[in-house]
Image (cartoon, rainbow, N blue to C red):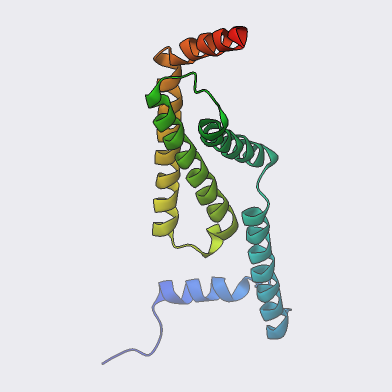
Length: 162
């Protein structure tokens, strides 16, 4: 009832596949396993290097933003008398907190990106963008309102008087 001979198409494909030599035929199983382990080790090593060694531009940008934020916060405490409007103090505090938090988040993501889940990494990335936008908006508000110019004029007047 059933024929034990394989179908012609199957026989032809099996003959073709048997005739093609595999590149692993001459290798031992231990060599293949060793090559796989070495490949996995090298790929994890290269990913760790990328996660730990950011570019010089990234480090420079990080340093400029964090130091600028610290400067804006400290200027509200150490500038006597305060030549700007009162609202500028609050804006400088918001700018400083947003910039310092952005820097801390950026450092954390640079050092631990390989161990974060994609969801957490995306959340921290979006948080960085929001914090940077808040800091930029606060700085833009300071310059666009004209308070930067008026404050510098008041500061020059105070220097002339003293």
